[in-house]
Amino acid sequence: MSSAFPLGAPLGVRERIAVALAALFNAACFLLLPVMPLIVSVLVWDSRYLRRYGHYFVKFVEHFKALREGPVRHYLADVFLQVREVPATIAGHCVQCGNCCLDKRCAFLQPLGDGKFACGIFHSTVRRFSNCGSFPLHARDIERYQCPSYFVVRPAAQTVLWMPTRPPGQNPPAPAQTPPPSIQ
Image (cartoon, helix red, strand yellow):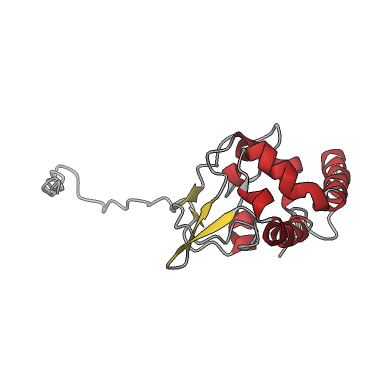
């Protein structure tokens, strides 16, 4: 899993601030880990996180380990108060594979069966402040999570029309008539 910033590349001020804030956020999450099921139960108004404390405690440990691998830095540097829409160079649709959900390590990811997953807090206000709504923002997001359905659209090469030369006075050939595509 790669970071939001390439290794060895010099970091600008915004990136250095993002790295420092990400480290601070990750440290705070690990300090709050024992009470995280309670905090989440209150934030999303769902008691299952508290009722199944042991299960969700383990899930939050994995969740926060995954966050340390770069998503928090990505959010702070590229998403927070920055880009609000997915660039037009990204195409595809979600197939609910769960790869973008921290490689299926998100504590909120709920299995649906048949290899499909859903976000357990999708309709929560809390989700609006997460990195989740911005996927995929860059080609590196698709590569990082090996997304099977989103892809980068490469601009098509411009076609150069070659017109044969004809002797003066000769009429150009009539264009070929093609029927309009049928609507099914």
